[in-house]
Length: 354
Ligand SMILES: Nc1ncnc2c1ncn2[C@@H]1O[C@H](COP(=O)(O)OP(=O)(O)OP(=O)(O)O)[C@@H](O)[C@H]1O
Image 1: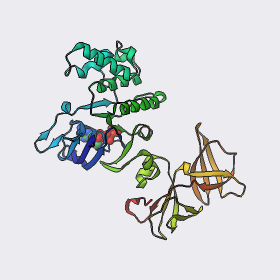
Image 2: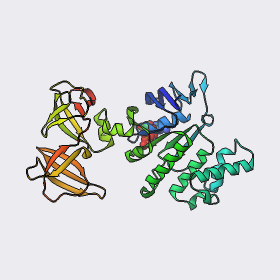
Image 3: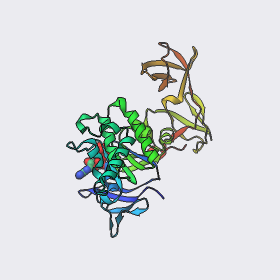
Image 4: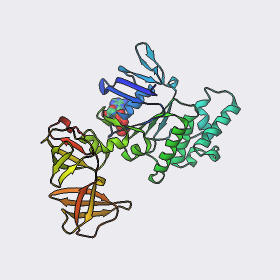
């Protein structure tokens, strides 16, 4: 059974549909990321799942239990959901332990049991020593951990996280993302996580749903979306993309200005089809050769890698290499063997065929 099933829902503001006929499924113990530009409807979906926004069509099921529909309207506090927000939403006048205990107090009266559960939750988020502190005495990362502990203590069946890392210092953000991901996985909690940062989406989620103006353009494993986007919109949103004009030569080969390029998987496009081959900067390799087919135009050393702009037979390609090359280098440009992604020109919306 899925942790969450959203089936053809419609949500509107002032009569204007923001989500229309939207469906999404989250498996048990899976972290689903909703990624997309500002205003595309990510938070609207989160609110609909939480029961904070009316759903006028379609149904939402959480762990198989129907939340809305004919004669059914489960209120937010009965959905067994934990919510984490960008601004932590802690009570400033309560110390850490009381903030964490807050949600439990309506369910558990025994003070000793509450104390033990708070200690356990603080231990989980590595804040065991800070129960007496107040929110203003904590860093952003620590405040967000308190918010996580406060949600975990109620043992939610589903966690909703709305841009939880946006206010966290970039230096600690990736570490916190790793810690919270392991925590959710360790506790077996399914989650939906909203962000507009692709790096956060890649690092935190098992599945990624890429939003575009109120609908989901593509859903799948982050790596699959990055490597095999179904549309140029997805390809461009998730990272730097080079497009090389190409024609299908046979079921696995494309002819380009760089010469024939062979795919590790069938292309599913008819012979002679014209289109664009997607090449990520890491899918192109360079080697120094005086008679090479390319010339380095520009380089930027960025620490972990070097961004290199190369001219190859009139094409300008962005390539990621480890170390900068000598200035004004002549290089041989080739494609790292992989299953090619090809967008036929004739297809509407430029859908990929491989
Ligand atoms: N309370 C509201 N009343 C009217 N329109 C709203 C309301 N809340 C959101 N909207 C509109 O609904 C659309 C979707 O908003 P939503 O908050 O879901 O976007 P989002 O993808 O989460 O964006 P962001 O990344 O900026 O948070 C936007 O056009 C927004 O202006």
